[in-house]
Image (cartoon, rainbow over all chains, first blue to last red; front, side):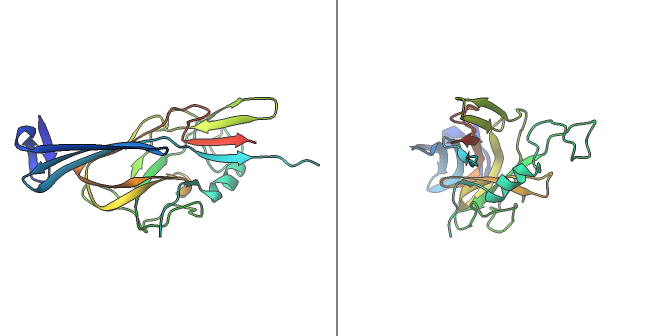
Length: 62
Length: 163
C-alpha cells in the first residue's frame, strides 16, 4: 500500500507503522504514524467528538 | 492562553436575531423570500496557544493553524441536514444540529500543535458558532478528520435545551 509521506508516496513495507488512541469523555481519537528510520514521515489523526455544546434555555415567570 | 469548548455567546443572541440559517428556510427578514438558502458554515483549526472560547464572536486568523495544504479559514462544513427539535415533556424540549459529514483536512502538514476547531458562519460575516476542543495533535503529510457525533437529542454537536 502506498503511503503519502514527506518524501513522496512510499510503499508501507519500507516504513515502520505506529498507531495509538485516546478514549475519554470528550473524544475518541486514533492516529497512525509511519517512520522511516528515525524520521516521522506521515502522521494522520482521526477524532470523534463525543461531547456536544449545549445552550440551556429558560423562560421567566411573571 | 488556552482554548475552551463552548457555544459562542454572541451566537445565542444572533439566533434570536435570525442571523443564522443552518437549513433551508424562508425568513421575512431576508432577501431570499422566494429562494430560501442555507448559510455556508466553515471549520477552522486553532493552535493550542490560541484563545478561542465563548467570547469569540467571529472567525479570526489569530492563532489559526498554518501549514502545507491548509487554507486560512479552514474548510466548508457539509450541512445537508437542517436543525430539528423535539419535545421531551410538556415543559422541556431539545433542538439540535450536527454537520452531516465528517470534517476532513486532506494531506496536510500541521507541525505546530493544535487542539480546537471553530465552527463559524461564512455567509453571515464569519460569525462564530461554537468551539470544540480535543487533545493536542500534529499532522505530517496526512489527513486530519473530525467525525461528528450522532445527530440525536443527547449527542448532537450543537444542542439547545429547555431546562
